[in-house]
Every structure is written in C-alpha cells, then in structure tokens.
Image (tube, rainbow, N blue to C red; front, side):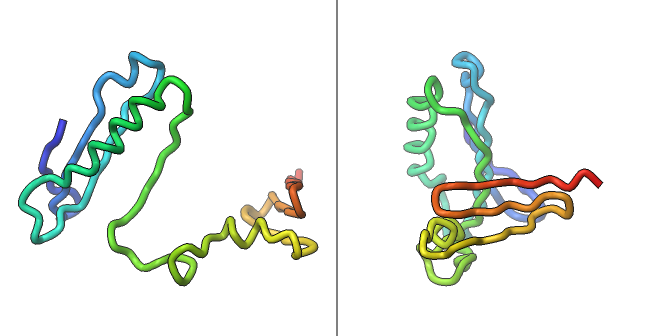
Length: 117
C-alpha cells in the first residue's frame, strides 16, 4: 500500500507491507521523503519489499533508518566504524557506550563489562 503523506512538514511516500504476520514477522513501514522533482513513486522500493517477503521465513528483521542523499557519517563513502573495529593490527579498542558498560574489542573477541554500582 502506497500513500503520499505529510510528516514533520515534509512530503513523504509511505509504503507498508501487508501479510508479514502470516509468516511470523512484523509488518514493515517505509517512510521515504519525496524529492521536489518526483512526480511518481520510486519503483525500486518494491524490489526491496520483494526481497523482504522472500527472506521473511528465514531472516529475523531489524529496524533500518536512513536519510536520502545525506553526507557520509564516517568521512568518505565506504568507511564505517565496523571497518575500524575489525582491524586486527590494533591491540585493543575500548568503547565506552553507557556509563555502566564498557566494551573491549580485540581481534575476533569482544568482552562487555557492566559496573554494578
């Protein structure tokens, strides 16, 4: 189902799946910002929905959020935090994500420590 809606003062395409619950999965909602020159819905989104339905029986879904045409978060395109984390030449990387949790990442091993204070 495709609808044209206004969300946070932006014109958006809203696409929802239908029938994912029949295969034990949650329904999927895609909210896609409409570009000023767009007159019709971008059809390539449907190929993603087809793949979703194909994988619904075997893959656990996870939320995915993205913004169209945004600048790359980690510098140039293709550089991600995961590329940094999998570098095995680094002896130890410590990431403090929450005040009570510290993550230590070594080559092929990850340890999490929780402070009980």
